[in-house]
Each structure stands twice: as C-alpha cells, then as structure tokens.
Length: 187
Image (cartoon, helix red, strand yellow):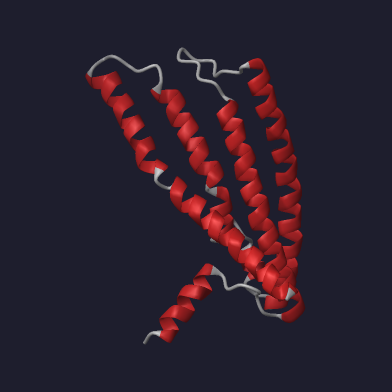
C-alpha cells in the first residue's frame, strides 16, 4: 500500500516534469524568431527594436530554468562518471542520496529567495533597466515554479535512490532503461 503510494507520487512527479520540460522546449523556436527578427531589424532595416533583447532574455531564462527539472529527470546534468560508473547499483544509490539531498538544500534556499524577490518585485513594481522597461515579477514567479519542480524531481529521485540503496534495484526505471526494455521486449 505504501509502496504503491510512493510509486504513484514518483510517477506523478515524472509526468508533470516531463510535461513542463517538453512544453518549454516549444519556446526555443520562438526565441530563435525573436533573435532573428532583431538581427533583421537592426542590420537590414537599420531600426533596432526596443523589446527584442528583453524578450530574448526572459525566454532564455524560462527555457533554462523550467528545463532544469527535466534535465535532472533525464540525467543530463554533469556527473563524475570515472568513479560513478565503476561502483555497484547500491553504491550509486548512496552517492545519489548524498548529492540529491545537497542539491535539494540549495534549491530550497533559491526557492525561498525567489519568493521574496517575487513579492518585492510586485510591491515596488520592479522593471528591467532598459528602454522598454518590462516588469520582472513574472520572472521571479517562474524561478519559484522552476525551483518547486526541481525540488519535486529531486525528492522523487531521492526516494528512488533510497530504494535502490536498500534493495539494489530502482523503484522506477530510468528513461534509458525504459527504452531498453521496450526494445528488448519487441524484437
């Protein structure tokens, strides 16, 4: 019963993080179009825009921050492979327990600070220091949401690693293992 609830929590987190990660990837072409339009306006029309630089900064921030939890889910972050790949599954689980807990600690601090910055930006109507001067509160809200997503993903990974350290088997299969099993099951 408890293991079923834990698996459902982990699967729910994986589903939400994958949805957000895949959704935010659609902002990449938008970012490319904004930058291309600014280059066209600046060098061909000789009339640079006042908004393209700020929009591209915000879009890049959204893509990078909201994609962080998805990168964690896909194990795309840097790892010390020379040591990590030579140890058993249980030892990997112990390494992950330590690194995920440490990462969660720092992300919680960033989340707390971004909530404060969001409230401050709303209260004092903070704006970017540019000619266009867009408001910045939405950016701090997005950082807070990105931190919450990363904390959820790290907690799911921590639970999975704890289970792996105890039993020697992962609670959930990693994305690479899932695709391997699918390929092996379908000759």
